[in-house]
Picture (cartoon, helix red, strand yellow):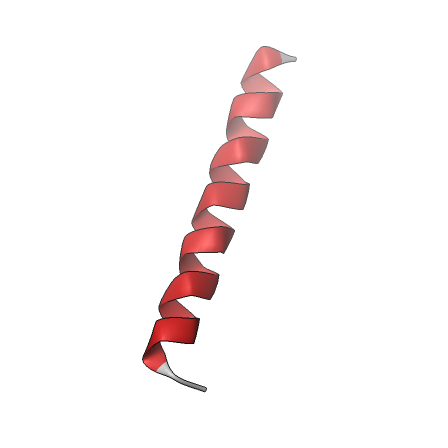
Amino acid sequence: MSHRYSGGFALIVVLFILLIIVGASCV
């Protein structure tokens, strides 16, 4: 597993969590 893949996965996780927070705020 390369560092680029790990960084990309971490970025996706952060964006996903941020999306959940924004969605929860809208509701």
